[in-house]
Length: 130
Image 1 (tube, helix red, strand yellow):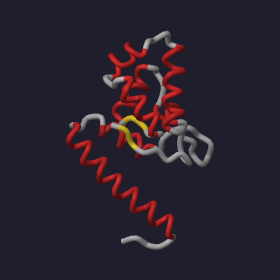
Image 2 (tube, rainbow, N blue to C red):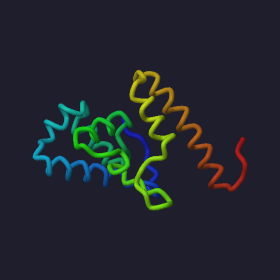
Image 3 (cartoon, helix red, strand yellow):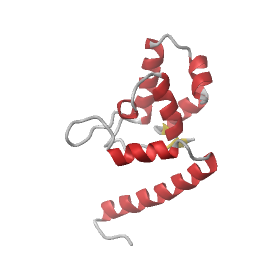
Image 4 (cartoon, helix red, strand yellow):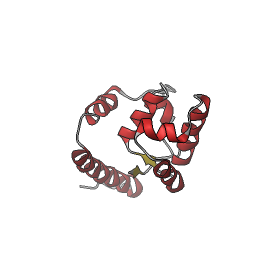
């Protein structure tokens, strides 16, 4: 499953796939091996790349472990103070998400997407959205 990307905050989906490819090559790993170890197919990654979206958080986390890197580095998240690390509350949420079933994750993702879209409409219109 692919998710939308906020390119103002982190690298684009296309850039992410290119970054994963760079890590893969540096580690001497084939796409087949990455697929086997991460549980995500090359075609799924390419679909995310084409749509400029991200794989799901569990997939990104698994890939970050394979390459011994952080999610922050993979996503190229730049905090306002210049640090490249997720706030502690976001790290806590990610840890909790990793232990939840896929069905529940989809429900949570839909709730987060609803809140996010509501916030974006609020931001776009400059008005309160209740």
